[in-house]
Image (cartoon, rainbow, N blue to C red; front, side, top):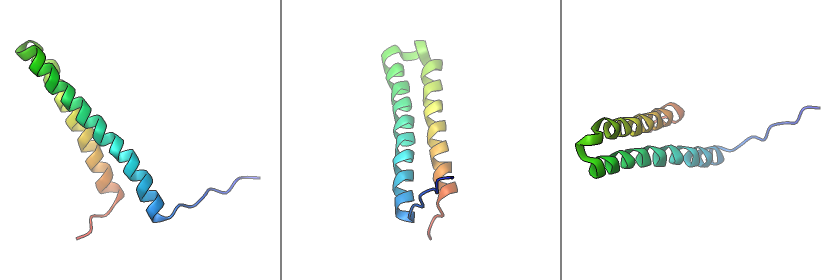
Amino acid sequence: MAKKKKQLTQQQEFEIMKLVLDKFLWLGFIVMAWGMYTFFVNGFDQLATSVSLLVAGAIVLLIFMSLIVKEYEIVR
């Protein structure tokens, strides 16, 4: 006998999605902060690495933004 899946209310679903997307936000911020740290510590010696980390963090944040826009309608 197959178990029936539990149905979540909209509020419960929103809270779970908020927790997941919050992790994406923190991950993107940490990667970008690490890129800034490597730039300030190493200067132009590690410029390519620093810029790569900054771009990677920005990509994570763009993924975060696209998930929000895709999942929820923006109320006008």
